[in-house]
Length: 246
Image (tube, rainbow, N blue to C red; front, side, top):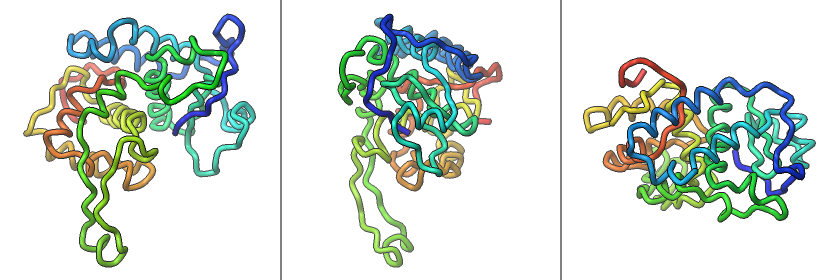
């Protein structure tokens, strides 16, 4: 999920870290380094962006759901499995997949430098609009076309989605993309092609997300689905196997 806009850093810009780093942090860093080594992601990782993202991973605190509510100022819903507050530099996650999702937010927002550099005012969406999000926004999404049951029994109509809705905004697409890559141990150097589309779509259809609006599979043509996987910087679990979909 998203974040709250309220800054609570210490005077030197860093919070004391009492808990050990989450397991996924080092795995995520290893993967980003492997992805960067391909030389294809300078627009999203260059000019210190990767280092700032790593710094945010080092500084963020994982807390319990109860503690998060105390810091955040509002208890998360019973159904909320995880949440990240960029201004408070804390997150909670109820399971491994959700942790992967939240850590993607931590890295993504960190690349902008906002969590450490802006500590005297509320953060805005512009402050945390990253190069990764810009890349995702540049890849077109298609209109939602209801199937027979959705149209005739549920009364759903054709809908045009935009990447500024919570269900399908760029940060959430990125976090869901990362979660999928970690779950399926996709090699960071993998370049997807048309032959991969059937298997890729079948696996994406199985993802639940927060509902139909969060299923990446239905929002991209084959061409743009390949762009999403090939052009957006990856954060995922360290994996020494050959390029594959697990």
